[in-house]
Image 1 (spheres, rainbow, N blue to C red):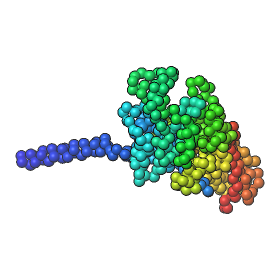
Image 2: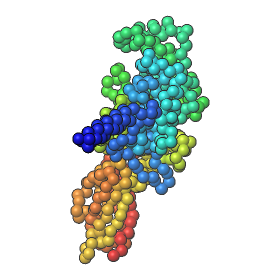
Image 3: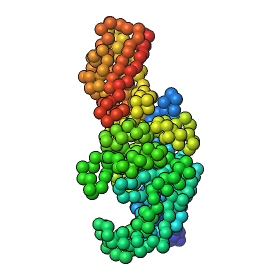
Image 4: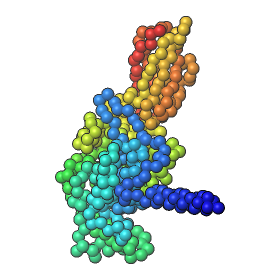
Length: 429
């Protein structure tokens, strides 16, 4: 009997310990540090492109938002998403003037979001840079300034002009539902009174890299969504205030913006402009990915990366497409697609090769060489992080083989795809 009581008592103790352990475990996963997110059960989704012979490839998202403007998450979520996606760099670019959460999150210091994100990324393999979205209606449009020192210097709110600001809001077409929303738009009108040229001069004083945002989105007065430069935008480009343009923003791509970039020697930029969750918008668990700017940089420092942006060394990866100037696109593709020659097949004039794709992008390939294939048609697809075996009919046995193909989803202008040439020798038997 005493033995039975002892056994029952021991079972109660063990059950209590198990319950406490379960509670502790639940609390561990339910709560965390304010500046970090658990990395428990992260699916593999990292964006990877191999370095070229001359440059490192920096994977960057240069346009992101949090609750410190009109985004829906805390800045540390942006950091965690970037880490999960294998990014090297993100820019925190809150709207300076448009602050819809100002009642709940008042922050007179417009650098606050950056500081929160920067702290969250400390001791992690991710660079977080400071930026701002300068928010204006057309003809100015939205403009990002990144690598800035102080966002507060890019805005001014003169309360002595509040009557004029209220009048502007009342005369606008915006629908206002309550007093809180009215105050948001009054503050927006107040900050918009600072001339854009003055803002851009202050950005230049900080040696900021500046680019036009989502020109393909236009306005309600431009329903065709064709990217066009306004006279004001062309003027600020001509004066050297603007250095790049988004040809990709979120789900949108613009051939017209691509052409504008070429004609005005603007750096090609592709961004997520994320407001919600990356997982909601781009579904990486289903094979999707955020748009990114691939920066060809001499080294992994902010100064080198900024220099590369000013010099236009970028490629944009969007859905299943790559966009970049030919001098940037060609080395990126050559580093991504490696040719591994085999020997001639016994008693034939057919040589086998493998094309190894070391990148996260898939490539649609069209044979443009003088040879035909023994085991494939002239059009084929190489999946990301995979190999494709090809048998080439060379008519005669050659010591050196010149092999070329077009990459039909890699564009160096709005309507021109790139052609890549390889020279290799057969493997000796």
